[in-house]
Image (cartoon, rainbow, N blue to C red):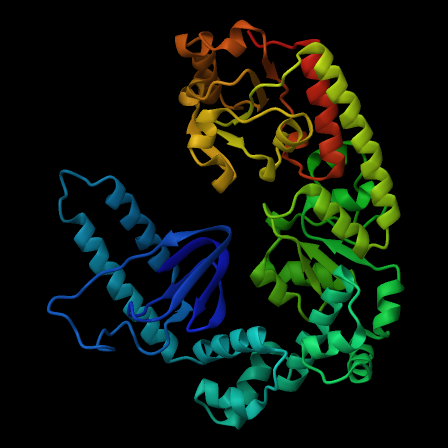
Length: 491
């Protein structure tokens, strides 16, 4: 198995491991494996047999360590292999076999190279600590797991992490305790046992050594918050809280919701500069989507609260962030006002159109269009969640609810008819606009009921509809209602 994107977990012989881009699994089919995808996990899973059959453990790829880090070349070869598997080249009948052999050679080279470096055993040890931090772990045990002497283990571990084994284990336990305090109100004694300490007083003492205040004081204090995406920044701004450092969308900046300084553009930031910027903000907590590598990187700075994308609606995320910021009453008041607006909007739609029917939102790029489920936002959480419209059957048949979105060539989107069609963005290049114009003048488009009934709406607000947060949802609700009631029609 070669992971080429997303993340998840895999259970090998009863032990869980994280999966990220580049993770490589090589094992015999007798190994007990259970895969748990989380955020858009994708890659290649190959099962193959050797002729003549090899004895157990004789395969050179199965060196006793099934899970490790692969190479970028392996990911590229895996992607090319899948492409040729799905669309064989008639003029190159052995391309698949050639790529498969190249992939096996690259996987073997990677595994041999990893086995010869301390990175291999260090990653294995860190993963073991991550999974078993609440157990009675010792330096000697970890050295035995790594297959090196305790002295060599200590030198390498400190050089890689900047901390001794005991310091790292204590920090990890305290960060887990902080995460639980931020998202729940656990009993101190139960929390101590949960993170690997025998009693609450010992946890409290260790907590104060690392954090500077007691667990109770940490829960009560007004926290310095850093947000690593603009949806969570917008949730704080809806609560009238300004993060110490945050990511802001261009839509938020136009509304003057962003400060002139202390802004973070996460997609443009290197790993080193991300750490420096976040550390300089001296946060008490960092809020993000699931970012395994960044969470480990920022472990020395503050606890990272990961709110899983697609598995949490914007209301649930908003409430979680409000709890972290000690703004729960304000969040409930905000949601109550939003609920009243949704109620008024539904009364208006009952009067104007009655039964809702189907609706679809399209973001149209240069040659590709995207539509989404309510779990991905983009205004669909409003249409399908708050206003009672339904996704068209053709979308559901394509697995919209499972994947969260549908990608289709622009010229084919008339194959997904809906009673109301919303277009939130259009191409910006000359070639893209020509394709879009060709779609609007095609017979398949003109035959759609939504076109005949004047229910095709061009909103052209990609920045606004990209948000999946309280402020964006409120603005999207208002724009959708204004559009439907004023009947803006594309010709």
